Image 1 (spheres, rainbow, N blue to C red):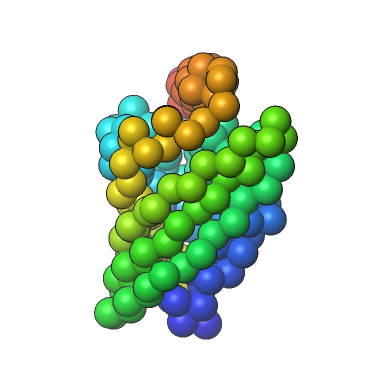
Image 2 (image 1 turned 120 degrees about the horizontal axis):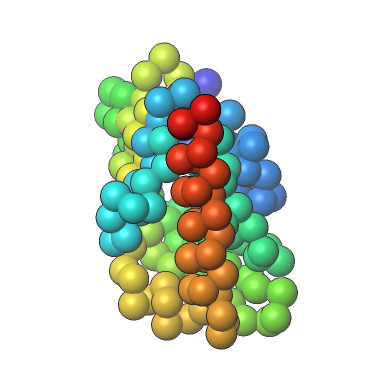
Length: 149
């Protein structure tokens, strides 16, 4: 399977809100970054990626991803896409995203998303940011406890 095909399947899994399937395409040391948020929101490894996706997208009713462009060169793939998040309360948010993916031995080792914070935040339903922040705090506390074990 080409890297492009792997990413098309990853986005299909994301649309299905199947975060375990998404993470299964990532290497054990995969780094998933949301550039506008910074290092605090970076997830490393499949378990952390599942937790991150669950915290931000887990309560969506559905998610649509339109891929506009994919450029594959060696083990690097650039993907321009638009995500449309559909909340159970009826609101939706459309987010243009540019991403860089790097592969090693068929697995994703870097997933770096670039998007605009104001575009995202300005379209979310009331309380969404607080729920995401609480989920991330809980995930980080659990990850730190597991790291100390």
